[in-house]
Image 1 (cartoon, rainbow, N blue to C red):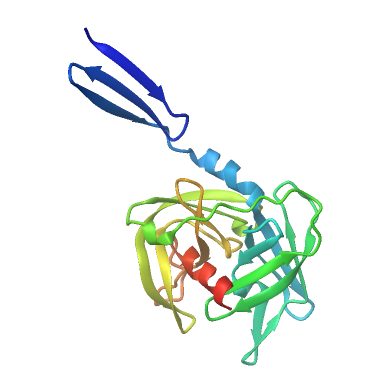
Image 2: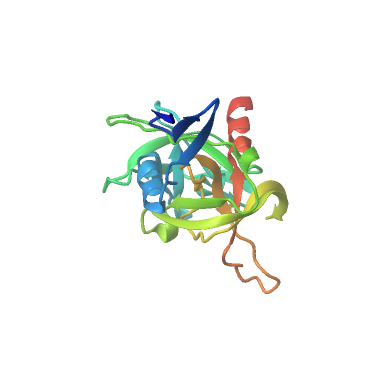
Length: 239
């Protein structure tokens, strides 16, 4: 007589065990992957618009990600700093805005590194729930993996674009600085700087940072370069 035993695990798999004679077969039914809208909705509370201002230079826009319940966030250094006659200065006023807010709120600049193009910020006042973004591991990336950029694209508010990993890690020289970055077939624009590069699980694997230009000084669209999250975490922990 054939007997069937069914065991259910809520997440991430349903396991069906069928016992036949002296042995049994195991079948794994994988759950459906997250959709792009699902990934966006799971991340949007952790990703903020940035506005940096100073009288002499004007306004710089970008994106940041919350990584701690104490209001600590990460972004690109080039959003909150500027150069003048070979010297680096920071913007006088830096503020952020959650996806559900109309007004910006003040943040403090904790530290930055222009060579790495990484900056750490922190909310001055916390009067709402803080949801840190989930952190992934860029060392697990493979060419062809699906990735998503979530950020303040063209300063129109948070949006999402989808692409793939072209090269998981490559050394690229940009503005006379060579960095190890993730190359993606992915659309980003001004305002995406410092934004979230997330994997298909919605985990942060990098910061969307720059595009290259061709020999005629025209932007090469569709190919984007991102700072690996492990590089960002190493900077935070060791500096």
